[in-house]
Image (cartoon, rainbow, N blue to C red; front, side, top):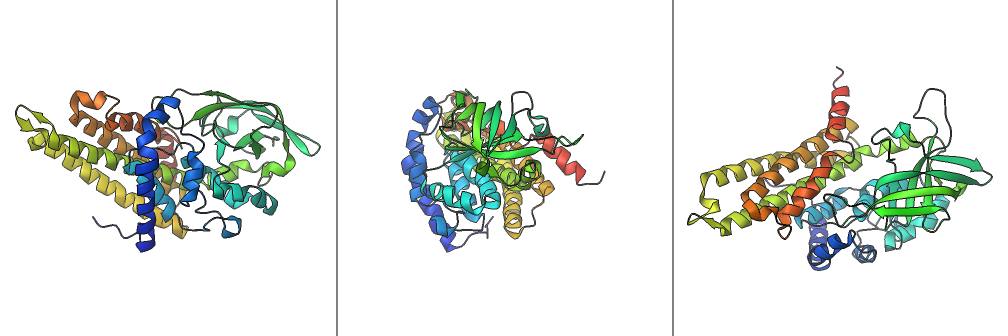
Length: 382
């Protein structure tokens, strides 16, 4: 079905991103996957075509775009190419909004030019080895010492943690009675700070070209001027961006599932068994028809959510519905498309195998499918 979200300016930007993906990313995916991360210089190249600075204010060298439509185009094209931009995806859709919303004037002047030109890429460190989704239960601490905080603790599953120049660390700076959500703060740790140690780049099932790190903080002295937002108010700040974060996951899930469908269509047209093209079997036709229909429904939901985000009407429950539906659809579609490849679908040399492995985590990060159902059920006033 025809989409009506985009105009000619969007289409021109999409063409630029698509060309960039084909030339600068897709040919290098095998080597980046083998290395366990995309190279740091990639982020300078993406900055040159305007990706990094889309939402950075013009006074700092960015485009100053308010609409999420351009971000949508970037991450659709990444998905359509069955590729990845590593930690940059989290930087743009998850981390940058915190800086845009809560950085003070001095922090903006210090960091935003680097965001726009690719000199700086940021990550966010929330999850701890023993807490998972329970952010209020974190044990990383930051104790005030004059003009600094002394940061101690450990984080894990940090996307972009190896390449990141800045890491927003969620730490406990105080306690307020029985409310575990109070007393958490956001501290921006900079590369090179003494006591900040990047652990191993974790060996994951999928998303091999995206670095995912363990981070250690041993008496790291973080200047108080690096606190983002208000001290003790991090929990509210973290939940404020959940809708966009979850929508961005849904967009990527939808796009990569679409890529899987296209790969399967190309494959079954060429592959022959029992003297017939795989595409000629009724089962193949029915499976692909189901996939195409489910993706059409998911696309409509995603597009409606993107419009809602731009209008300021997308609620956390709405975003949870979109993420739940899009990621579960992705899982079903990619699985069916791999099945149509037969044994070749299980071979790493075929992109469908990578999409299958990559898809599994979308139902986990950004809030598991079970958490999404919990958020949705609360909105039903049960």
